[in-house]
Image (cartoon, rainbow, N blue to C red; front, side, top):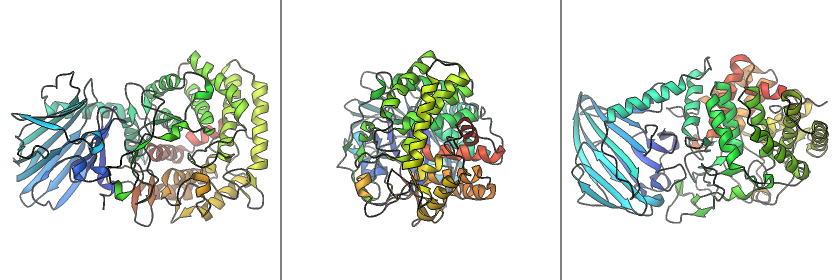
Amino acid sequence: MSRPLEDYALIGDTHTAALVSDDCSIDWLCFPRFDSGACFAALLGDRSHGHWSLAPRDRFRTAERAYRTDSLVLETVLETDEGTVRVIDCMPVRDNRPDVVRRVQGERGRVTMRSEFCPRFDYGYITPWIRKKGRRLNAIAGPDDLTLHSAVVFDITDPDHPVAEFSVGAGEAVDFLLTWSTPQHEPSDGLDAGDLIEHATRWWREWAGQCRYEGEYRDAVVRSLITLKALTYGPSGGIVAAPTASLPEQPGGVRNWDYRFCWIRDATWTLLSLLDAGYVQEAKDWREWLLRAIAGRAGQMQIMYGVNGERRLSEHELDWLPGYERSRPVRVGNDAAKQFQLDVYGELMDALHQARIHEIPPDPDAWKVQRELMDFLEGHWQDPDNGIWEMRGPRRHFTHSKVMAWAAADRAVKAVEHFGRDGPSERWKQLREDIFDEVCAKGYDAERGAFTQYYGSRSLDAALLLMPNVGFLPATDERVRGTAAAIEEELCREGFVQRYTMESGTEQIDGLPVGEGAFLPCTFWLADNYLLRGETKRGRDLFDHLLSLRNDVGLLAEEFDPRSGRLMGNFPQALAHIPLVNTAFNLKSGYGPVHRRAETGKRNP
């Protein structure tokens, strides 16, 4: 079996990120960007596909780990019969080259350590040349050049499998620095690991110190915000959905997608969480990324882009990797970038609306883009689409998509009436009313007393829990209450919410075999639905239950499998940490992102 996702912690430098296991093996790392080929890919295969381990040679009794307070600097304490060591891992927020810093620090006794440094470029496909010069190793293949500066000497008798054994006594430290470069650039000289670790600690603590949330869930909120920041690509401001690719939504399943790209929807929700926490600069950076990424004709807007706004994200399979839990195919790239998803227009319009509410300085280009998007939406809101869940079956009239088209029109009206933007507000008001009337007529099943997944269906969709969040209808409306009740009855398994109805005919809708875990964001949305109805205890109890799913360092994946009790899907997932922040704000004061967004909407009768 593959190692449980709960065993991994995240380190990163706002350009890329690595996953470190609880026994101190780096099993996933892409250099130099999130979406680059992995040089350690054991996560999707085995150790032969690339890893860098650093642990006691002999079996250790216990392992305890934690991030340094309010930082992304990881410390793992390993206790053996010989003594105790502390392994410190981090990736300093970079000036130019990406670095991984590792320090082994003796705490008690003298412990014999063993490190295996086995990079494999291109997701485990390419075994590099490894050259040794003193205590420095160079791993070279094609455009990639890794340099490992080490305080100890590696044995490269087997050049494909360098190994170092060394001992560390109490008060001693052994350091490692891994740097990526290209053949055109000289590798860096070894730098002081202690200074780099302290620099990384200060950088993250200064950033976390800007958080304006103060309440009983502060530790969980700050950890989630740090995770979201770690998923931001610093040079552009784009925010990736996750740092990983092809982690399955069900063990052995085929729903294995690459999430190392910037979804408009996910990035928008991340922006709202950061705004409420007080991170204005991130909002400005994201807006600039957004305007660059979607520049061009409104009809060509994609649902996702590369970290620098790239549009071609061609999906292909890596047939040499066996996959996590033997889940194949292993995919990189994502063909969903070609889909038409109507809801992203609403999320984008809402995000820019919230930026104005938070008094982000106006950008004339932003309103110009919004005007063009509204022109497109007016002519295409009645078109079928692929929906929020990126259905790979035929396009349909998904109810949630229409609700978000309504939200786009609503925010356009408010831009004119509340913020003095120039636009045809009366025409947009009529558009808003037309969409509302159609959704209530075609998206609502009076017999079931619930809104359904798409027009004319009896299927349910947990995304409809978001209707009151955007102000389409209040959570107390009998139609919304009926929808939530139906979702609780049919989509909940052991207290967790699945995304949508999965039955024998589902494959005709999403184009995939039935089967996945419970989707954690949907369960947070149900908690918010309780809070908006005034059922605070139910909302708090469900929120606390969700917090209990986090691993020992506070991270959540995309999904949870109640049968095995394991996290599933890409990890850590922005879309799981975003609603954690939102719900914590709502519980704190009764007035947070959900309440605010609901109040800005048009409450139709």
